[in-house]
Image (cartoon, rainbow, N blue to C red):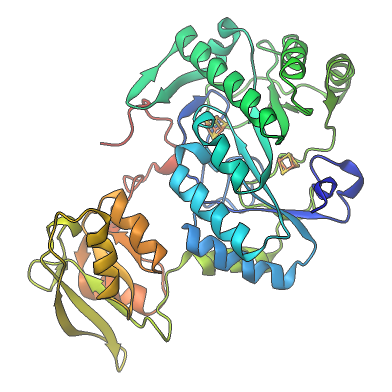
Length: 419
Ligand code: SF4
Ligand code: SF4
């Protein structure tokens, strides 16, 4: 594989080779004071924005459909809209599918680096060759002004303690990436009054760790963030900064600050056709092999049962345009770990989705590997199953996912997650 074909790492190919970002990582483990991750924004082009979120299997099918129309995509990456390692299962599963189906593509991840170190071995084995880490400060006092909070495991850190922890984890991760021969780009967001002078120290620090290139990105003005209203550095200031930082590490100068669902050549907007493919990929549809949906319900009228508690599933399909109950199937006995979910997948070879009021991460993961999507929702079966069976989006008000409160991922939260 020719690694020089990455259009972000090699400006010479940016007019001929494209990249695709698969938006599979909605959550984040850090809150940067300049970030606001809004979905559903087709007009705004900046990191953190995507029209939708895809599950790994949806992302894989979507990639196939895009490649039929945009054949010059050299790179498949994950760049949010949150952080790949705050959504590790989804990230690794997606990369695994892409690597298997498209071994000719360069695989790339963009992360804040907090949760990366434990997975460097694994991503090296998966042939992920390019990783970008956003390193905005190498002095925790400065970092404390940039990050509202940092969450590692169950703990939430704030202030200097948070910035120190993040820097330690980023330093560890960069070292490990270089030990594994992975190409590392450092993104540094230039925030006037906070780190515009300090970015040269970041360049020195990153170079000493063996990073390959730095991408100094002027702050994007984003409404609803703590840094809203702060000025954006002008082109001249950026040029001077890059000259200084360039004494220590090669500089990227053509970054287009892409969306988390960007497709095509760097700097070109997504076409309408791509927007339609993405919307279609996000809709769970029955297929000829899987024409039905299974429902966890107490009485067969409402989706109102947690998957772990369901002793039977109700199978629904469409007959003459009406949602009809076809059968009831007992679920495998609890207590057999992941085997229970594999057994469940085997009794649902004709179902594309399971509708539940709630489910754990393990069944979601195992069932998705069999092509069955777990959908958490509450309401009338006829309404929810009807939407899936007819290939329509489920009304958001019925969904029971994180963000169903309406704030979505634009919520900067408290760092403790939704209840
Ligand atoms: Fe998370 Fe910061 Fe990246 Fe936003 S910019 S997704 S808060 S790491
Ligand atoms: Fe490349 Fe910059 Fe776009 Fe990332 S945001 S894909 S580095 S051009």
